[in-house]
Image (cartoon, rainbow, N blue to C red; front, side):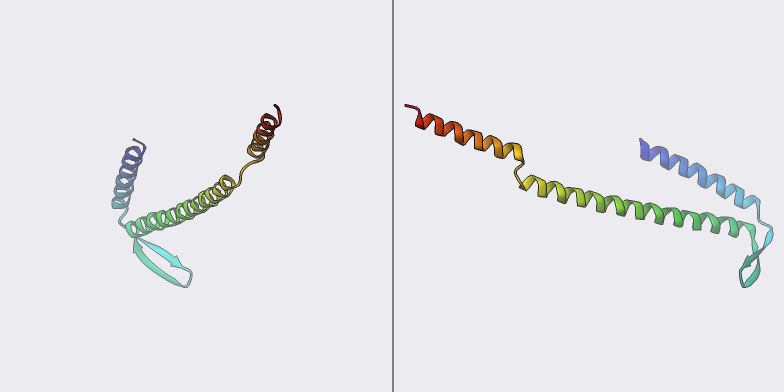
Amino acid sequence: MKAQTAFIIGIIAAIIIAVFAVLNVESVPVNLLVVKAQWPLILVILGSVLLGAIVAGMMSLMKVMQLNAEIKRLRTAKQANADQPDESSRQKKRHEKTESLKCVVTP
């Protein structure tokens, strides 16, 4: 359901951006630091949206990679802790050995 909602919102946003871009077709000056050019406003709008989507996607990808690395680190730590018996299980085994010795010693 969450993915469907995000998809529908994305489609609506794309339609709004497309309509807005089509309504703005006049040429505008674009200053690219060294070069000045006249481009249709539709290209400037769509290029800006595309660049923003790429930046947002890259930032999301970096966050996902960080979270995956954290999950891997935590799983490794959990596995290392699972391999080592904890203090309570050692005490329990020691207590069981002591109890079994008491049974043997007692006539």
